[in-house]
Structures are given as C-alpha cells and as structure tokens.
Length: 96
Image (cartoon, rainbow, N blue to C red; front, side, top):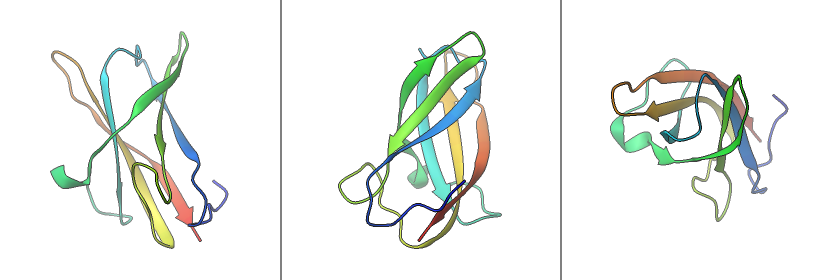
C-alpha cells in the first residue's frame, strides 16, 4: 500500500472474502505484531458487495472515524453475524 499523509482524510477499503455486506463490520489499527483490544475497534461500513465478498471501509484522518499519527499500523477487520465473529488481519497501513 502507498503511504497515506496524516493530513488527508481518505476512505480505507479492505476486501473481505465471503462477506454478504449485511454483517456488522468494525476495523481496528494496532502496532505491527499486536492484536487489537476491545477499545481499538471502530465502526465501519460496507462499500461494495460482489459474489466474492464485500469491501469494508472506514474514513481515516482528521475529522474521520479514526486519526492515525505517522507510523505503520496493522489493520484488522472484525465481522459479526448471528453465529460467527472472525477477526482478520488485513495488512499494513503506512501513515506519513
């Protein structure tokens, strides 16, 4: 992923295989190698749905759902339905 300026406010999109887009979705950011704590989770939303799954998205940056200082973060997605609640590591997000 290309670095994102800490001054910008973009949507960050994370593909989730086999998601229907009807589940509750949350995104967390941690330091690489750390798992998210309950307080790390932020509400997200579904952006697009296809036969393969759906894209979770969250607005990051000043005025967004979460503001990230310069550094590298591990993004996580948590999808909740009636029975399952997978927590999926989703890759590194560099902020400059």
